[in-house]
Image (cartoon, rainbow, N blue to C red; front, side, top):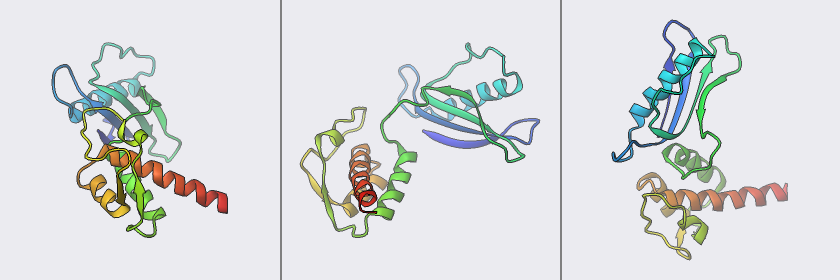
Length: 172
């Protein structure tokens, strides 16, 4: 996965590109740079010619979105998207946001929570060291999230912290 901002040649506008699940054929995952270039090329073509046909241009990722950010500070305009609204496995970009939520919402990182079946059944090519019923501290889970890049832990923390946020909203 990769999120980046690019200059648009011949323009002061910028292009924001987010690519997820970059793969191609029998190659291993992590063609994020290739996929980002492909999406940027498509977005720039659409920027220059909004009615142009880009259907033959290759895309080696499952999910992507590209938006033009006007130099004048106006509203962004999405110029390309592919499965942009589909839910997917937590990836590194969303893990950083999950980490921020954990640090913001969990005052005592020695507090424990329990993984459930929903957390550990996210599929994909990642292997988890955690099983439904495993109980860990938020601090240990935070390390698994940030150092091991554990998708299962990202899911578990998002669920657990989401419950805390809902409980906090109810008490307000």
